[in-house]
Image (cartoon, rainbow, N blue to C red):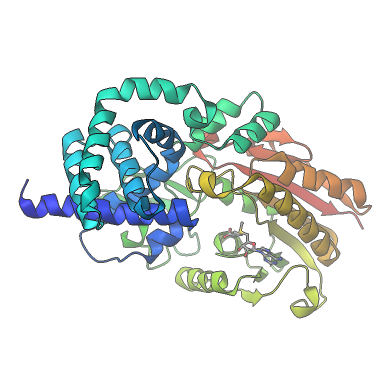
Length: 439
Ligand SMILES: C[S@@+](CC[C@H](N)C(=O)[O-])C[C@H]1O[C@@H](n2cnc3c(N)ncnc32)[C@H](O)[C@@H]1O
């Protein structure tokens, strides 16, 4: 390896350490730190940086326990980038299976790039000791469930209480990388044509039988560079989210509300499927810009409104809707494999606050639904408090509602709805409950 490429390896690791420290110590989301980083430079370096920050966030709670054991005393707060560097060094060796001594050497060089030359010896010593003592460190990490599963204790406990028979498989699925699933825009092209066009570029894709618009890519890639993306032939969307539109049973001419629409994945899918009159509402103006950009790229149109569901006077004209989608803000505990930083950022108390918000949004929307109309309540959470408990309480209170049955293919029966558990059919964790207004 040349001196230039050696230095490049150190540069990438120094950058990755800074970003990882932002995620872990400042609570910034993985997506936000990676979106904000420069798009210049070598594509392979960018891919390595993103893969490293993702894997290190995913396994932080496991390797953190090992690092504690390897360090004689905790690192000072001002050395937090070095803390992150040590963590990503171990993850690159152990999880990403990169050549051991090349990783150690690049991390030592990165220490200097991070402005901490006096810690280069420590980084070298800690990573080399890690290499010598790996098996004992793993054994020790396996003795506690937080480091064994790389999940916070509160979440393991909640998952165990909610899904006693499935807890181990949920935790394991959360620690896997998610597949890349696309949704083909049937207004613009056919699935087979997309498969053929991608194949000509060497990208393999297959059509899963349970998703009429879905495409599963053979490997992860920068989708925005694929042929057809700019022309709006497809979007990225997990299969569980694609199933939402099937439950809504949309018909031409219907007036439909997507009450929590941003960034617009499900709004777009509805418009690709049926000629409806759609209001795409969201409280977050910045996120609504992404709805507009997505609809424009896909050649679709809706009334995109900024507003709070609970303050209807600011956005609703009083005409009822035949369909409402409430894809509620939630803990996102069903999509941890895509957003592993959730394990580091989410707190138990958030779940209680979210459940209260979900119940409030559901109650606020009900008067806007026409008699005979359907409201689909969905979340990407796997916690019963945000799903069947919210819907169960609503059903107990309301006289004009009945829950419609949902087919088994949507997942486990969960109160009046169904829950797809993470990894089932390769999809994210997702909850669906379909409510009809009786009068
Ligand atoms: C799970 S995301 C929606 C994802 C979206 N349905 C999609 O498929 O692309 C939840 C959204 O709810 C929005 N939200 C939260 N509280 C709201 C409120 N009171 N009124 C309207 N939107 C709200 C958030 O800004 C966020 O964009």
